[in-house]
Amino acid sequence: MQEKIIILDFGSQTTQLIGRRVRELSTYCEIIPYNKFPYEDKNVIGVILSGSPFSVYDEKAFKTELDRLRTHYPVLGICYGAQLMAYEAGGAVEPAPSREYGRAILTKVNEADPLLKNIEVGSQVWMSHGDTITRLPEGFNIIASTKEVAIAAYHVEGEKTWGVQFHPEVFHSTCGTQLLKNFVVDICGGSQSWSAESFIESTVAALREQLGDDKVVLGLSGGVDSSVAAVLLNRAIGKNLTCIFVDHGMLRKNEFRNVLHDYECLGLNVIGVDASARFFKELEGVTDPERKRKIIGKGFIDVFDEEAHKIKDVKWLAQGTIYPDCIESLSITGTVIKSHHNVGGLPEKMNLKLCEPLRLLFKDEVRAVGRSLGMPEHLIKRHPFPGPGLAVRILGDITPEKVSVLQEADDIFIQGLRDWNLYDKVWQAGVILLPVQSVGVMGDERTYERAVALRAVTSTDAMTADWAHLPYEFLAKVSNDIINQVRGVNRVCYDISSKPPSTIEWE
Ligand code: XMP
Image 1 (tube, rainbow, N blue to C red):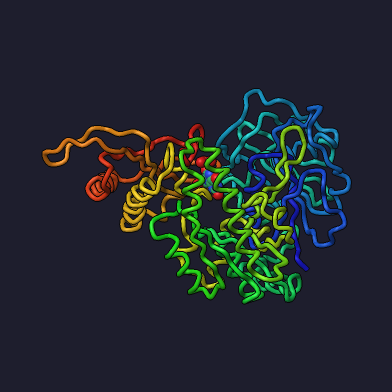
Image 2 (image 1 turned 90 degrees about the vertical axis):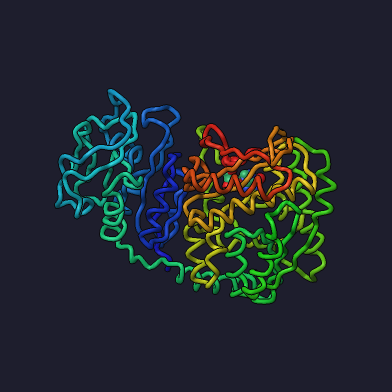
């Protein structure tokens, strides 16, 4: 039995974070749209109701059948989830005099309440709400308050039902992990048995069962997700898995050779296809970023399809899709936006069945599984890299010569980050080749050459990002090395824009 917590999603920005926190408690959980609760699933041990962009009294507010949850399962409502339970039971929820956002301190705590075990007066919590519960229904008792919010947490008498106005899933709620642990482990009885090892064991068994003697193809990108998926499948079905690694010519310096070598060392049955000439030809003269993406996406599908057809009797296409790619995200109108795939269009074109062994994992869990499978740390910690590669880091048209200039500059930057122990401190880094030339002087010579921009960001999920505050000494060294060693570049800039309003990639 795979015991699980269900997180009902009412559209909050932090719903995924709740999921990650529960997983960090070694407990399996699933995030499900608010109106799709799996009542038939016998393995559910508890329910968490998320926050929402709506107010409970809005006409369009997302509602769920609370009477089928309360008293049937332990329930914890967070923010909107707490307000919804109070409101539907006859309590009052009203706009707060001012929107409450940020840190608050618990001034009263009922320490005898099991949800608040080991949580003390003075603990910091994170508030983010426009509404507040102003009156609780009968049987709902206050168990914690802050200076501004009298009803910061409540318990329903005679039930395993709780609500909290604050966000325990957010890092700044210092008692948040303890509170979630009290709920998941003490109240729901979670056994904390979900781990990378248990995942590998059950997934390998399930893959053997699902795939039997069938042949499977998988597209490798050099990234963590597809690599871990490949190693996991390799453990399950060995030589029945064929991996295809396409070089579209826009990879980093020596990337194709190095990564191919890594894959071979991991024992993977891998075919490397150098299709760079074809991509350069199709990209010739193209400057529009979206067209570049489309050309590369389509070219990749075509090359992959051709290669896969050379293998006999393939039945399955495997992909390294991970959980955040699959969670059905709720739009504000309540419609469900379908999940997306890494390589859109490929499964349809190839008429193969789809196998996605990582579809239940968050990124940090994918890394943990990779480590457990014995993969080298440099593959696991590799920065994200966009599918179209350097094509979206060369502004304007693409030529082999520009790619080679950029590869050299990029290599100096990335190698420098490694040498200065900065590589693991940034989420992602790279160099952008700008479509401008500027005047410089080298020795006694006037130069008129290209400018490049360095980009390095910190982030947790690429949805938002800050520019990395790299040491000046490091930037000075990299700038110097690039200008001295890369022919055709005489100026280096550092990109200090955050996302939003900028994006990580320039195109
Ligand atoms: P942006 O530029 O949107 O990037 O802030 C967010 C993250 O997504 C990566 N990225 C891509 N990945 N195909 C990909 O596989 C793409 O077309 C693509 N565009 C951006 C980007 O590198 C960053 O990690």
